[in-house]
Length: 200
Image (cartoon, rainbow, N blue to C red; front, side, top):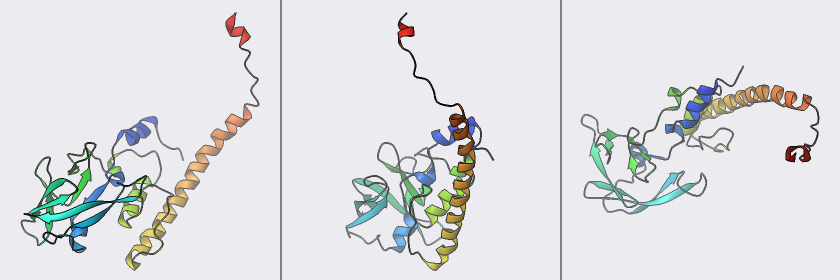
């Protein structure tokens, strides 16, 4: 099994993926009781701290807008369902997720120019599924990074699936890398280059 074509690797490298982007989910915040008027809280957002750790932003609800840091984000009700939605500050569309764009603004997926991993040709087997499952269990989306130790019982199958897929990915990468390394080693030791010949 090969790692895929050069074009697939280039597409995957150039795309900004939803699964690897910093985001805030309006449903999760609503369940956690963040949307109380005038209550100021420190919102933990994975990926905005040092490295890939979670950082915190001051958050408060004031006059129908949710303030995340120093940015006011419109907060609306769904037209048919009893659930809240974000109003994107870039295009004014309703959305459940906001993403941090290159300019430091919280905007929708379209305005942040993000692509779902499944829409990009992947050079690695099962990589998109790993991204998606790791996001589901609120873990770092990068493969082989530590997984949460204890999660809700309904997430146990997802954790088992992540481990199985990462093991298969590791086997596939090793299977492709070993022949390349062997061909390099079979070339034998290289003689040091004589630079005096270059001068003449």
